[in-house]
Image (cartoon, rainbow over all chains, first blue to last red):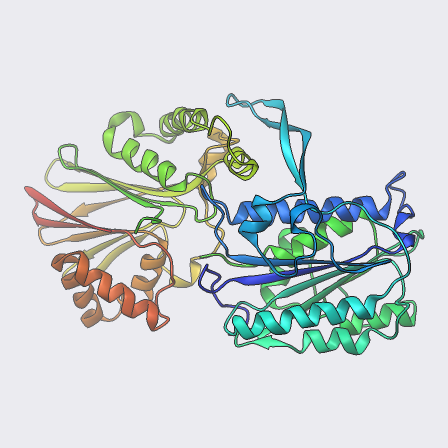
Length: 278
Length: 240
């Protein structure tokens, strides 16, 4: 049965996060979230996702169940890690955890041990900073992702298939990305094909479409392109959707169009939760 | 074995036994599993009803939470510790009744008890169908603990003991395997029982073979076998 490989240190899986860092990401969301800039929300969602992936692998130390690549595209194309990981491609999760660019203090409510909550200052790691510059070289970023995955799959042929999460707010400026996205989704380990998720975030107040199973209601060719680049969700991922309160049809794809900030955060949950650690 | 998150508790004097399964992804899961197993076997009537048990676990959870990492710890250890720990527990006690011996079991989560008699399986508790084991079992957590959260996931069962009976207390992966492959296959059940009686190297060999064959999930394994030599005498043999 595909997508059933156990994830262990001997047989890790990987996540590739591709972030649109073009100039338009400096605009605010259009869904009435106040003045939330897309670039800020995306960077925060990615930092939270990396934080959660590190913690899932932490006992007293971090065990390398996952490898992670973080790519950005805008005025530059390549690794989006800041700090000492800058420039690195696929990074073992222990290196990610040990090397945030910085730690910032955040306020958090924690249990007080007697049934109440206590406000506490906690250290929160930052790996990627909000960035919004330049055009939208999506094809170059997908090429970079494919190159990283080809090498990783050669080294981990029996892994739980890699998951690629791509977030963008606009159309590619360096060509048609469809065949490149489909080419990544056609790569595979012995446990199944690479899963490609695409999340489009919008500055317009437009109707949100999340995890559709067909392209009938998609408003334009760009939406259809992203839909066709997105993988059909395996049952385990649809179950995660149900746990998050949304029923996903059989055939639902890992695709969100006109997503808002809430949808963006949930998108990372749907893409990363099912990985089954051993 | 150094990373095994399962724990076993045995108190022969009180005839109380437990297996606990610490959640793979949780901080200090082995320690929390040991707390729960040890607390079960070291106590008596105070655990007899659900409310008293919940109160005892609440005290235990607060003690666990007080032992947070201190000093210059990495951010991820701090954050992980804040998430708390989780474990499933199966507790068993035996006691004489008017004309026979009885057992009582309490389960939170998917650690399972199988009660065997010569003619076959008498009881499988709390799960008797191997397809019911899932990746999100009920667990006892150290954070946000309350009696109200524990009540709906706590289950109890009881039975009568006869001479020659065997009770197997198992964590989830091996319990699922047992119910799928041994419950209706007497030869396989006998092979497993012989392995349990033969000691760690034999049972480790069997577990390894079953894992390699894809029949047994690659998860921690803990089995406690309790053989009832006679209703006046109860022996035990732990295997991890």
